[in-house]
Length: 451
Image 1: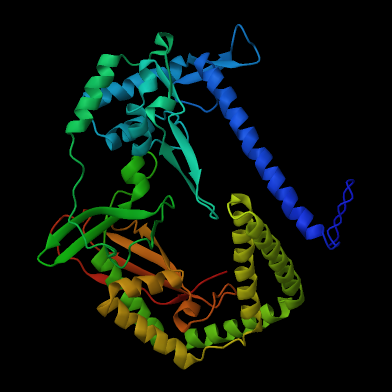
Image 2: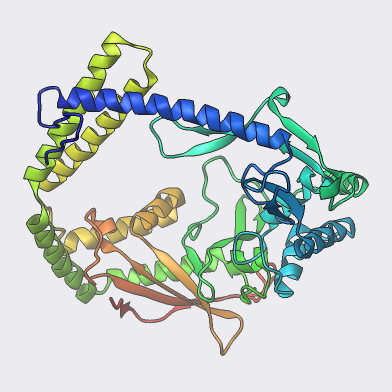
């Protein structure tokens, strides 16, 4: 594709690539200067008591009487009542999750998400703004070089812009201090620790609530000798309350693993399922080879190499140029990505045999028994997700419904064409995971996953 503009730029000319790189550097410099000017202007607004953007629960913005084009903060009385209620409940000794459950049960609208969470409560009760102290420029956002992630860092106190605004007081300073003192005395929830990098159990990260779709997280853990017993429960129910999700029962990690292993053994003994997967894999491989376009990838690779070369030339002349270094790193990352795609297209497709699949299943079963961490990683690679559905006829039983991608076991790709097979099973366990009762595990027959 050829790109032209009114200034005479031509992307196909000998100097076109160099002009594009230089234009990018000039634009980047302008963006940095513009950011500094915007930040300086926001600082002036903060000192004048005007809004600098953003939202805070309990407040709203209204036009400034002196400068109608700007906004100033004002108290939202409806939300302020909720803020005072939260601080009163903290003083009364209620925990974060108990407060969330109460607010969600009363259908109080949450600040951001659809329901209140304990993290939202924590942020609110530690916010000094509710005492009428407005602090701007407390943090700054730092972006990782060459990566699409960022984080907040604290600025030194000398850069903070502090303004006392008694008219914006929702919580008295005395009550705020009492709440902070009370929170400092609370002890965090303790669970038996595991060694660094160890997964809690095989089902970790693989369970989803069949009622609301939320993930399952550890709700209880108990050490008996050298073994750690773990129970999982719906995160939405634990964090937001029964008004959001009524599924309160916990499920034993040990019983879940037993049911999963039993289903894998049945799959291992089912030649019909394995044969169907091999046929589906062949269809998918044929479709992938037909859709591949190596010529387009070669053109993209050549352009990326030219960008990397031009950026390297600029760095030779000006080694401290940060923008040129960033452009070079981005171009090199693009080169690696395209080369990987070319290698994937050029490599012959290795079709797994029935023996390879059954051998992979046997190795997976051995890993789950001997090396749980490695076995868990294999299940993640196979795209396993288990939905936990309570059995209506018996509150002490669950139905585990999920699908396993045999491509991950055989070392191949994903089977989006319907050759996967479902793993349905049920695990019988006590209503509360901490109750000491005898529980058994059983699984239903293998059913094919519908697409």
